[in-house]
Amino acid sequence: MALDKLIDPDLPRFIDTFAAVLIYHYEETLLPDLIDVFGPKMLPKFLDVFAGTTFEVPTRRKIEEVVRNVSIYLSIKEGRLTIDEAARKHDLTRGMIRLIFGQVRKISEGANL
Picture 1 (cartoon, rainbow, N blue to C red):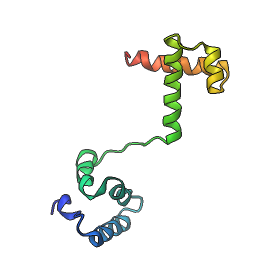
Picture 2: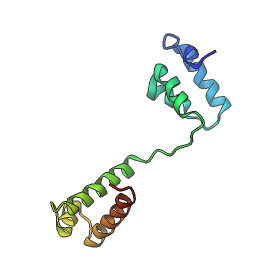
Picture 3: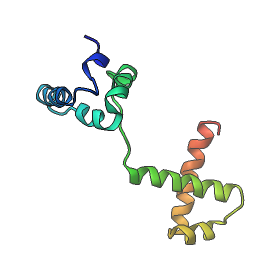
């Protein structure tokens, strides 16, 4: 039986049972959470694309930090902010701003951005 036939949005009781079986069979599964996030119609597509793949999802804080760091890099590179202005704006030391600038520059040059 195909997964899209198995996960039927018209059968919420079956989905609850399916989630319980997944938890029982795979102790550390996130599939019941994925059903909640993607819904029963999109979960089969997600599983088709990513089945067997291991990946790490960064925390929201890490994503915000990366966005901030790229913003600092671009602002200084494009001349919109000086190192001192960036330090004041982001409440960081000048040394931290230089470190961030260097790290992002190294990554962006390596990626030919």
